[in-house]
Image 1: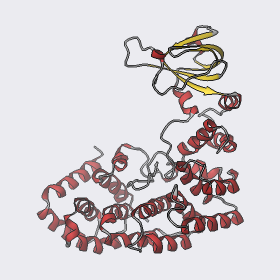
Image 2 (image 1 turned 60 degrees about the vertical axis):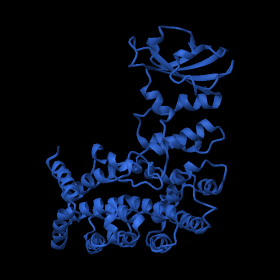
Image 3 (image 1 turned 30 degrees about the vertical axis):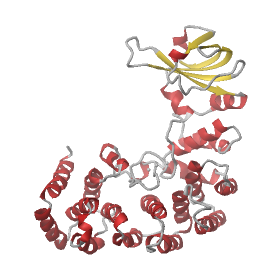
Image 4 (image 1 turned 180 degrees about the vertical axis):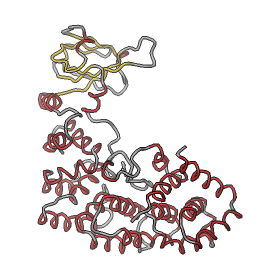
Length: 421
C-alpha cells in the first residue's frame, strides 16, 4: 500500500522541478489523492512527448481537446440565440432571432439583431455567415471595456446542427446521459458535429467515459483508426476507448486489432499511438505490457517518439488499470533508467509510484556521467529526498555537498509542500 504522505509529497515536489510545462501545473490542481474523481483527455491531455501527470490532468490523456465544446461555450455565454441571417456584408450582418434559450432578457424582446465586425469577439477568424443560413449567436461581456460591452461569436449552422445544439443536454445533466447523446455524432458527416462530439468526450472524466464505453461503436472505431480521413488528433481517444469494452469477446477483438496496429511499420500508424498503447494495456493486460516493454522500453533502437508514447501509456495504466501490478509496471519502466534522454522522466514516474527498488540504479546514475545532465540531477535529488532507505540518505548528503543550491531548493519545496503553503 502506498504511503499517502509520501505520495502527495512526491507529486508536489517533483512537479515543481520538471522542465515540462504541463508538469508545472500539478501543485495548483485539486484532488491529488482522489483517484476516481479525476478526468480522462493531453490527463491532454497527455500530449505525446511531454512529461504529464495523468492523475491530475483535466481531460482524456490521449485527446487533444484544446478548445471548449459548444455546450461549454453556451454555458459561459451571457446570451445564447439561434438566428437566421437576413443580410451579410463585409462590415455588418443582420439576423432574425428565432429562439433565445439563454439571456433573452438582455435582448429586450428584440426580434432582429444587427452585428458589426467590431462587435465580434474575434473578427479575424469569424467565418462569413451566408444570407439565408442559420447561426448560433453567443455573447459574452467584455470585462476589459469600460461599458462591459457584449462581444459576439457567430457559428454557422444548418438544420442538422441546429437540432443538435438545441437538443444537447445541459452540462448539469448526469454525465452518462450527456455522453450517450453525443455518441451517434462521433465522426458525423457534418464536420462541426463530429468535432464537437469528440470534444465532449475529450473533456469528460475517465470514469464518465468508462461508464458508457459499451455504448460506443466498437466496429466503427476500429475502422476510424485505420481511416486516413479521420483527423489524427482523435485517434488517441478511439484507441483508448477500444480498451474499455467490458464485453469479453469484443475486448479480445479489440486487443488483437490494437496489437496488429501497434506492430505495423511506423509510417503506417503513429497518430494517436499513445492511445492505442493505452487501450491495448487495458484490453490485454500483462501480454500487452510484455510487448510494449520488449519493443519500446528495452530496445535501445526504438524511436524516441514511440518510447514517449509508451511512457504515457504506462502512466495512464498505473492510474486507471487494475490487472497489472504496480511493481510490474515499475520494473518495465526501469529499463529506461539506462537511456539518458528518458532517465529524468523515468525517475520522476518511479518516485511518484514510490518504487524504491530503483534506488540503487538512481544512486548509480548519480555517481556517473549522467549527473552532468541537469534534468537527471534534479530528478535524482528529488527521488532520493523522498526515498526512505539509508543508502538514499547517504547519497543525498553527498549530493548536498556537490550541489548545495539544487538540494536546498528541493528541500525548500518539500518543506513548503509539507506545511501546506
